[in-house]
Image (cartoon, rainbow, N blue to C red; front, side, top):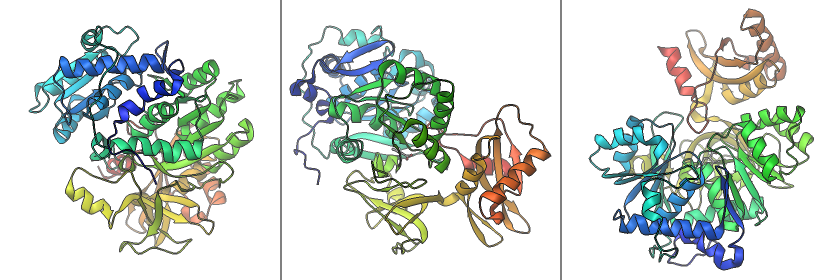
Amino acid sequence: GFDYPERLNAGVELTDRLVEKGLGDHTALIGNGRRRTYKELSDWTNRLAHALVENYGVKPGNRVLIRSANNPAMVACWLAATKVGAVVVNTMPMLRAGELGKIVDKAEITVALCDTRLMDEMTACAKDSAFLKQVIGFDGTANHDAELDRAALDKPVTFSAVDTGRDDVALLGFTSGTTGVPKATMHFHRDLLIIADAYAREILQVTPDDIFVGSPPLAFTFGLGGLAIFPLRFGAAATLLEQATPPNMIHIIETYKATISFTAPTAYRAMLKAMDEGADLSSLRVAVSAGETLPAPVFEEWTQKTGKPILDGIGATEMLHIFISNRFGDVKPASTGKPVGGYEARIVDDEMRELARGETGRLAVRGPTGCRYMADDRQREYVRDGWNLTGDTFTQDEDGFFHFAARSDDMIVSAGYNIAGPEVEAALLSHPDVAECAVIGAEDGERGQIVEAHVVLVQGVAPDALTTKRLQDHVKVTIAPYKYPRSVKFIAALPKTQTGKIQRFRLRDADCN
Ligand code: 3SK
């Protein structure tokens, strides 16, 4: 079990506690051209916490929104807000005033901490809000030259953190949703530590010598875990990139000798390509892949070219982080792995009956970190008998490994055949002409639905009938021929959420209009 004291403040556990353990001089954060030690991070967050309380009147339980790209200042603001007992909502820089407004209303946000470079949409949102009373600017660059930074400047470097309970809400996670409707879930102070102790300690075996790099936004719990909570829990270092493109990640890996990467399969494909042009990824000891299923060819190529493990896993904002994962020495290509310690997963039918091994059904998960929706109707719909229905269709094989089949709404039924769109996508992706693709079911008078592929071609390949035929033939010889895409559409880019998930529903909607 996960045994934490009844009184627990995660902000303290991830900063001051490391200084107490003698890691004060160790690097905690690297970003925007600066390195900060644990002592510096502890001092910084304590000064900010004083400012939040004394200058802005932030009280325990207040809902505080943070708007920023991935940088050390965002991490410091989040930790400071956690230390004062606020309930934090981290948001992505790309959100517009209207999207921010929905979050502000749902979470009843009263205070927003905003990188001064991103103020316009935030102030536009505040203008129309019944809840949001204060928008406070912080400097996301290394200059510390904005309102909040100035308020914190001469404050003491020690702060008596709010005596929160381990089950007090610390974080609201908003799912960006592949269906387009955002939902909010609640996470406790203890949850922030559990994900580190269950996954990062047991599976990644993190030590203070590790250096983390990755692309997911801190506003997405995949990023908050992988790029802040996991390194800070163990006294390791986090590198933070405002523009986390594959070339920028490679630069960081080469410069700082990063050891653990967190990103999605598309970025790993790009990094493999860069290796052919001389990129040096040899410092990485493990690559974590999530967000989309890791295709077997990418797994094989990574393993063969780097000689290091790449671990596919699945998580959810609802559960805070990864709850099924492959492990060192216990990996099956194209599988998502087995439940992380403390979590249980099973495959169920629509009546919540557990299915036999090998049968395909709905993935249900339960564990110590969720799932707790803010809205009761969501809770009733997605949490049954304590099990969270993730919206994914999976099978579990005889060896206990879970295999992704499709998002439940990505299953295509064509002439009576069940076809998992992602399987067709994997087949298309194994063709050298395909850069990216998404497969959906398109309405068809004869077959009910047909498989329709939306394909982004590699540069230089003609989007013509010959290419269509080549791709269809390739699918027919790669998987069962009935699964081939009867319709192929070429597009310049796939619609994606801000966390990089493909929004197949938008392709479906575009087809219907
Ligand atoms: O698998 C995911 O998409 C995910 C979501 C939230 C947190 C962590 C992960 C891996």
